[in-house]
Image (tube, rainbow, N blue to C red; front, side, top):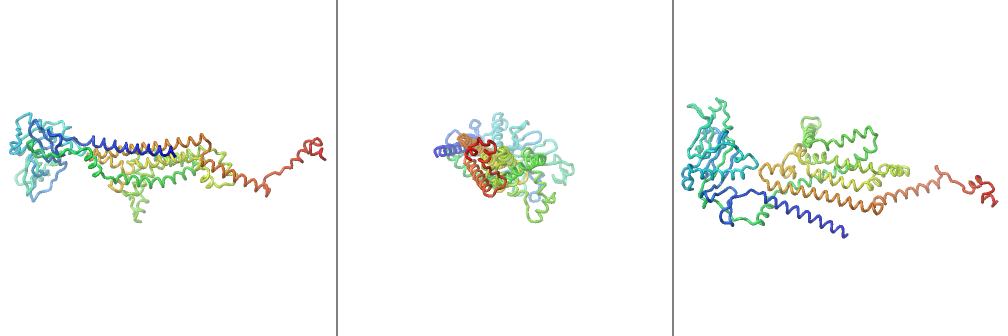
Length: 510
C-alpha cells in the first residue's frame, strides 16, 4: 500500500509539473508588444509606439485577400477595404512595398515622410504589427523588396495602377487596376481584355492609424495570474475530449481484435501465419496518410463498399466514427504484435499438457495464456492507447478537421500553429509530451512490479493457472483409476516374485 501511495503521488506531481510547464512556455511564447515608459501599462495587441520618434500606430489590421465585385455599381478592379479611421495603407506589391500616409494625419502625429529616421521608425512598427497579425503566413519582414513611403493618392508600378483611398458607395478601398483603362471600359473589363490578373497585383494589404505617441492605445499590464486565467478561459478543451473519447473506443475494439488475431495467428500453419502476420502488421510500417487515403477510397463513393454503405444511410467519411476507425487501424498492429510475442513466449509443453488434460482451446486461452502473458498484454494495451491518442495523418485524411467532432489534439496543434496561435499549439504539445511520459512511466512501473513478483516466484495468475492444471490432473488420474482407461494397474508383489523368484520377500513368505 505504501508503494502504491508513493507511486500515485509521483504521477500526480508529474502531471502538475507538466501542466505548469505548458502554461509557462505558452505565455513565454505569446506575441511580444511594445511597452510604454510606464511599466504598469502596455500597448494593445493591434498597437505599437516608438517613444523616440514620437508617434505610433493604432488599430492595425491585415487583409490577405481582396475582392473584384463592383461596389454599388462602381467597378474598382481588385479591391481591399480600408478600415475605419485608418490613415496608413501598406501594399505588398510584386516588386516593392508602398506605404501611403495621409498628409493631415502625418502632420498631427509629427511624422515627416522626407525624414529618413521617421520613415525607418514607421517601417519597424509596421513590420512588428504585421508579424503579430500574420497568423502564421508570410511576413513583410521577410520580403526582400524596397520600401517607399508616400503621401500621394496613387502610384503606377509595372502593369498595375494602385489607388490607395478610392471612394465607392459609403466605403473606402485600396484598388488595384490596370495601368491603362480605355475610355468607356471598367478596370475589370480592361484587365479581362489584356489577360491581366488583378489579384496578382497585391499580395496583401495592411491598414493602421498614425497617431502621436501619447495617443497610442494602451492597457494596464496584466499580471501573470491574469494572463494564466485568461489563457485557460479562452482555451478550447474540445480537442482533448475528442481525443480521449476516440482513443477509448478505439482501444476497446483494438484490445479484443488484437488478442483474438494474435491467438488465431499463433495456431495457424507457418505459411498462412506469415501471410496473416504481414496483413495485420502492415499499417505499422505504412505512412499514416497512406492508411487514411486507402480508408477514404474504401468507404467513399469510388468503391462498391462505400456506395453500399451510403445507399443504406451510413456515411463514414469526415465523421467521428471515421476518426475511431483511423485510430483502430494505426493502433491495432501494436496490440497484435505485443500479444503475439507474449503468446509465443509461453512454454509450449505447458500448453500441450493442458490439452492432454482435456482443456479446450478456449479454456486454455482464457485460463492459461491470458494470465501468463498479461504483463506484456497490459504494456501493449497502453502503447495502443497512446498511439491512438497521437494519431494525426490518417485521421486528418479520413475524418477531416471539425472542431468538437473530429479535431483531436495532434490536428489542433497543426491548425493552431497554422493560424498563428503558437501559445495554444505549444500548450497542446506539452500536454502530449506529458501524456507520453506518463504512458512510458506506467509501463516501466508495471513491468518492474511484474519482475518483482517473478523474482519471488509465480505470479497470482500463474499460480491460479497451475493450480487449475493440478486439480485437472488429479481428477483425470482418479477417473482413470476408477474406470480403467489407458492406465496399467500393476501388482508390485507379483512383479517382484516374477523377477526375483524365491529370493523375493513375497516368495519367502510363501
